[in-house]
Amino acid sequence: MTFTLAHLSDPHLAPLPEPRWHELLNKRITGYMNWRRKRRFIHARSVLDKLVVDLNAQSPDHIACTGDLANIALPEEFTRGHAWLETLGPPSAVSLVPGNHDAYVRGGLERAAHEWGAYMRGDDGRNGFPYVRRRGPLALVGLSTALPTPWGMATGRLGAAQMVALDELLKALAQERLFRVVLIHHPPVSRAKWYKLLRDAGALIGAIADLGADLLLHGHNHLAMLNWLDGPQGARVPAVGVPSASAAPGTARHAAAYNLYRIDGTRGAWQCEMISRGINESGAVRELKRVMLVS
Image (cartoon, rainbow, N blue to C red; front, side, top):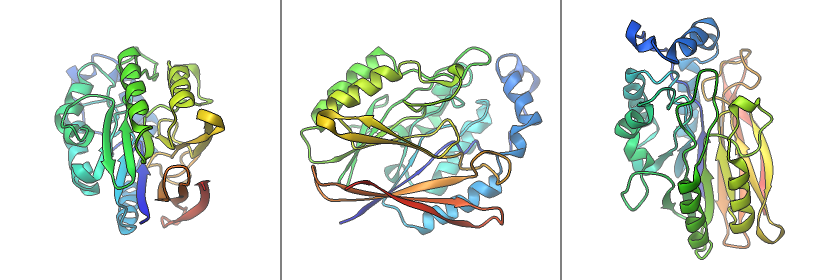
């Protein structure tokens, strides 16, 4: 039976709640100024809502969201984020990993865990990363690259402890006949400026080269991206990014879009078709392209 996985990212929920003055006595002040100057014209809730209506109409079996629900990690943003996640589905049907804007200041990740924890919890019921969720023929592996960073920085990091746990998971999952999907916010391959990169991308690329995966999904760059990572024994692993799910047409390089992955087959003979759907200048959501990633 074909299993359909949907992927969207970086909704940057608008409008931004009006902050209290004392909430801006930290890194938030630059993010708030950037929102007022530019980002409020890019991220439109009406665009995001249209995209989600179209996504739900496709009746995916599961939905993955790779972070940045928040903008500057105001307390109210996490409450709003929980309400928005409920429009996608219950925690059992939606898998989430956090982004750098969710960890914009210290305490952000703790609030995210409190409000969104049920969407970031593995089948074993434990909190923390990496987590594993098995859905149909899929094993979804959720990673966190989110951490509070200094002013002007948007880097991510997995860290040694998470990488050790990931290695163990990938080894164990290699023994199961499941389609392994890695969920992460920062891309392992990127042409972004140095202050936006995944700092230990090399460790992740090396783990996948040694232990394998079938698909890696990310956000962060607000672009439609497809890079191929080396896997074991000459295999190639697609690393796919999507634009911001709220980017209004004409305001960003890539307007809002999401991907569907139709997955069928068995270990050694998987088929994975990627269907991109996005919003056009008239405000309609349409199919943009189809690509066979694995066959």
